[in-house]
Structure formats: C-alpha cells, structure tokens
Image (tube, rainbow, N blue to C red; front, side, top):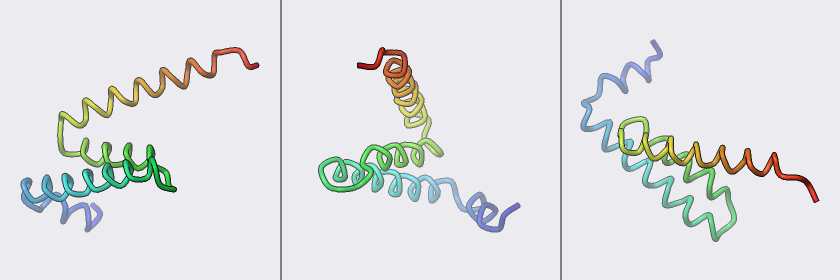
Amino acid sequence: MDPLKHTWHKAPRSARRIIVFVAGIACIVAGIFMLVLPGPGWATIFLGLAILASEFEQARKIKVGVTDRYRHIIGKRRKSPKR
C-alpha cells in the first residue's frame, strides 16, 4: 500500500472528515468565484463535490444526481440536429 494512503487511513475518521470538508468547500467556493472570474469554474465545483463525496454520503448522492443530469444534457445536445 502507498505510504501516503496508509497514513491517510490510519488517521482518525473525524480528522479525515474535517480535512475533506475544508478542501471540498474551498474548491466549491473557488469554483463559484471562477464562474465570474477567469478560470475553470464548473470543473472546480465538480472537483470540490467529488472531494466531499469521498467522505460524505449526502455529497455522493448530489454528485451522482449532478453527473446524471450533465450526461443527459450532453446526450441531448449531441442528438440535436446541427444548424
């Protein structure tokens, strides 16, 4: 096992959850700012959601819902006739 991964899983669950929460929220907030500033806003928001989903079930459900909706929209756009 990777030493970093081993250390991460050895850490207390509450400490891991706090670190994941702070990192995920920071990415989401940065992504929201990047929606109006230069930068990959949506990608950063999705990254923050993925980080949160690694420890929180509610975030995992939201991530699955958002991913499904995104795939549905992309599928619709690909099927629509080009002008």
